[in-house]
Length: 250
Image (cartoon, rainbow, N blue to C red; front, side):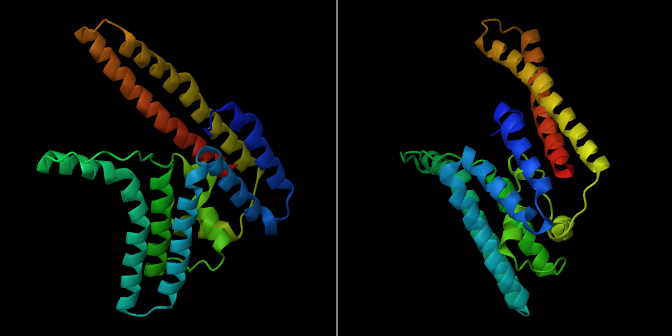
């Protein structure tokens, strides 16, 4: 589910915000977690278990690291990092390693039909950030698994980031205040990001599509294509970042 999609703008987001602001404080996090898990399930239903597994690993090793002493703390940190990275490496680099092996040893190992789960880099590094902060004692261990799951899976940053350190949001997971000014700022930031995505990035993307289908391949056309593609990537990333930040302020 993309932030710029009609489903998100006119169904998911209004319902999430409306229910969130009428719920008592004690259950707001539960509602946000349920909405975030649904958001991910809507786009990647079969990979939801991967994200939940990463969260579980981080939660368990966070508790163990907090209680451990001396070198055992570092061992537990490395164990949690390697376990969390294993899923990312498996999905992202398995075919790359197979290709390198085929090239070096002249083998014919078939590539695997592995699809990269949406947001796996973001929720993996968010989880690692938590374990590192607990190891460094920069933040207290999170004993409520729902709060940790919310930190890792919160839908505004799940698809396009940015990656947020656990220490930066640990207090807000427990208690936070809302204001009309903050809400208005969030709406403005989201609208700016939506404009970058829909009006600019998509327009440059349409031009790039025309180029790929065109028979005209002059030097000038290649330069125009390169500039258009660069601007598409920039406004795509910048737009999603603005929308994510705006949603966080709302």
